[in-house]
Amino acid sequence: MLYKTLGQTDIQISTICLGSMTWGQQNTETDGFAQMDYALAQGVNFFDTAELYSIPPGGPTYGSTETIIGNWFKSRKNRDKVFLASKIAGPGEGWIPHIRGGLSKYDHRYIPEALNASLKRLQTDYIDLYQLHWPERETNFFGRLGYVAREDHFTPVLETLQALADQVKAGKIRHIGLSNETPWGLMSFLNLAEQHGLPRIVTVQNPYSLLNRSYEIGLAEISWREQCGLLAYSPMGFGVLSGKYVGDKHPPGARISRWPNYSRYMNPQAQAATEAYVTLARSHSLDPAQMALAYVNTRPFLTSTIIGATSMDQLRNNIASINLNLSEEVIAGIEAIHTQQPNPAP
Image 1 (cartoon, rainbow, N blue to C red):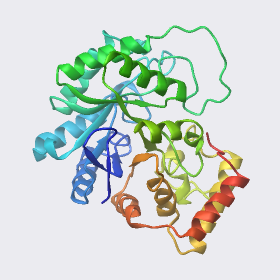
Image 2 (cartoon, rainbow, N blue to C red):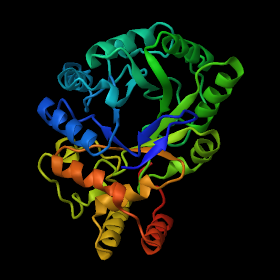
Image 3 (cartoon, rainbow, N blue to C red):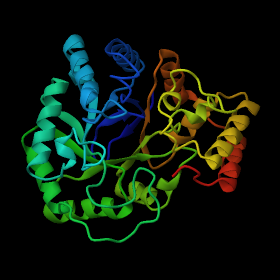
């Protein structure tokens, strides 16, 4: 395993992070235990979850993934071996009414409420990295394009930082991060933290893959210059870049087969780009999934690549991507495809 430094700290976290959002629906607790056991044995010391999980979100499965991780900690008695990240859900009145009525805010009321509930499910006294799952304000995230300026009311960034700082002082959070964030949002948090002596953002968890390199526009430079690295989620585009859906295939049990509305990476342009990437990988005798992950693993603005798997075979293959070095010829091929089909799944 390879390791990267977390922000401006001296903490070393694995370049591969174990994602967990399928545990509780696509995967059982037994599956989750097996994945965590294997990942830790391979040197993966970084696990990521969220109060929202498992996915798709719903009342009956809310918090189920955190519960599975908490049961694993209790069973294995190894909390100190894992750098654990979780997230507080933002507002979502129309699609997550089961989480604080869909009216969650990043303020002095809701941050402690959500955090304490997560700590209870996780059976731990602290979370190493606590992240805001998506911006409270109206902006571009979850594939939204074309920012439209409108009046909105969101918790001031300074108030959010102060609420998080209270939990850092209490020892319940060690570091803070953002997710699905924009350049304006990240710089606002960084500048206000510096001005007021508040905890500094150490990571940004955003989508990044061969099908979506929009992070490179604006955010990548901030990550590099401010030492606030990317945690790349969906590095395989919901599994699309493995090639398993090429040719209009719908493997039984696969996420998009079960939930066709997860179509962000299945538009015609994304499918055409995927076919090209899969062809490129196979022409060089590479596994398409490993090629896709290896590209992400080696970006200079990256802190860790979040992988997810529904089977142990997938997990083994994904973790093994850390050992793959892409040749200059393969990199050139990737860039050529990207030029022809830039960011087909933003």
